Structure formats: structure tokens, C-alpha cells
Length: 198
Image (cartoon, rainbow, N blue to C red):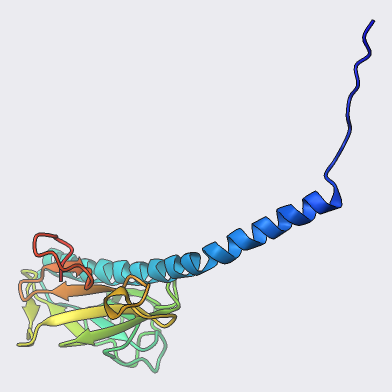
């Protein structure tokens, strides 16, 4: 009769140290890419939130057949002000300056319908609007007082340079036309046939 030998052998200290060293090298190689991906995701989250707020403001203007305002603000408290570099935003029926901390209400001034803090999911994103920090949609969805230079919002990161500036973070731009059309584009795309081109 043959005897069966069962080996109950674990890892030696040397094997364990080699495994930890290999894991450490893999983490060090992948960490910069992971950091850039996280920053690019925060930029995308912020751009998506701005588009969501703009689309909500426009749809409410159409639904109510009255003016609805989307405003980029520097904060969401009682000291808030419209800001071209504000990462937070408010959708309201009246000017929200100095009253962004108010609870959303259709009756109490400034009649805030929705608001979002720039720290929600995108704390490292920066916003730079050109044209206006406040966009007012009329009852047919067009922008009231559209500036001659157009309206755009650049969304970047505080943690690095954008790909269009030889960096590694994918920055985005939100364009708003006079007709109220809202579109996200990628400044690094150069192909005219690509719909992502700015």
C-alpha cells in the first residue's frame, strides 16, 4: 500500500518579501496613472454637474414658460455671489446673490429650485466661465442677454496641467449657444469631423 504524503508548507520569508517588493513596484508604476485618472474623473463630474444644472434650468424655463436663472456662485451660504470662477451653482427664479443658503422653495425669495456645491464629487475641479457667470433662459429656452463673445465654461483641475497644455489630465469645456443648446467638448481633440471637438 502506498503512503500519501501531504505537504503543509506555507510561504517562506524570502518568498513573502519578493511578493511584497513586486507588489510595491506595480503600485509605484501605476500610481501616477491612477492619480491622473482620479483628477480627470473629478473634472468630468464637475462638467456633468454644470450641464445637468443648465439643462434643468432650461427645461424649467420651458415648462414654466418664464425666465429661469442658472448662476455659478462662489459658495452656497448667505454670503454667496455670482462668480466666473465659482464651482457651485444655483438654479432659481430670481437673483440668488446673498441668499444661496436658503432652502429650495418656489415661493420664498430667491425661489431656488436646485443647487449644487462644487465640493460634491469634484473638490479639485476648477471652473472658469467666459461671457457670463449667470445665464437666464426665457420661456422658449433661449438665453436672455447673450454676450457677443459667447458663453463657455472651462473645467480644469488644481492638481495638474490639461492634455491640451502638454499635461496628463483630461480637461473639458461646456459651450452654451444663444439658442440655449448646451454641449460638452474636449479642447484636446483637433479632428474637425470628431463631434467632441470644441
